[in-house]
Length: 371
Image (cartoon, rainbow, N blue to C red):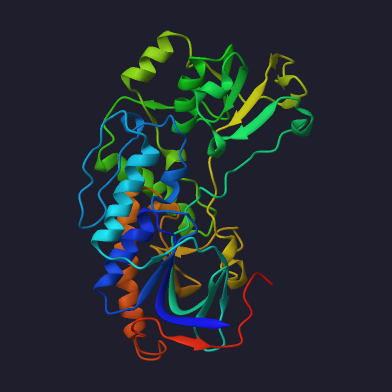
């Protein structure tokens, strides 16, 4: 089995992973980025085809390269990946793809073993930037398995045309839910919007002060070792002219969460029924950390106790794009912060071997794959 030695492995080439890779370039540490996607763009390359740049909240510049705003009607799934690809080229980042990491395990020499479908990397430190897109969250409700229509998650949303003439129940209170609701309402026979909590719309600015308050809510949970709520989940919905027009048309009528699902629709606690052909779960995502399970990083609260981007239980590991850094601006800062800490850690006496420039290759008997 070929094992490649490197100082730092970055898993994931989205905003957070690319930011970390950029700052690693001048750090004196050898590094490699492993990305499971077929091409540049992180999760953006998988966004639904009807998502246009006009409705994207904002893409913050990656470090060292400005993001020139594309045309408002350009597909987000085209514009952002093109920017990420140009960034990788400009800074000659060593991104290997498609490489799917199956597990990260403790090595017997103080290093970590990153196992993948393309071999094993032995590393002194790890920057995990796998985001959430591969772990859509599906709530469970009584009778869900009996539903005779179609159920899908936002991650698989194909665009509004697939719902023409159908009765659609959309579940979720975030921006993705509202955006898909507005699109589907244009073609569906009927739409019903359901949320667990009443949505909060904000007419004021989404400025730095507001952003800090939002991040603080998420950060408090990860410091306690609780599973993080997403940044989006604690952010109010922007009251845009588009939303105001939809409200006037009666589209933004929110109903509380139903109690159960039946073969032909959903039912509330008071017996009210809503017939449905489709249930669209716009219920968010969870952090994709299953490959880190062998490291036993989760605490009693079910989450990973964090100090900034650093895992408290193992300072060799940094999670970027996790918890409070799971936003485009937060991801940039997280990448820089993680590399700054790792430079100090790996330069300290007793931190392991000195740098392994270029990623030496050794033949070792290491079993790959989950075990």
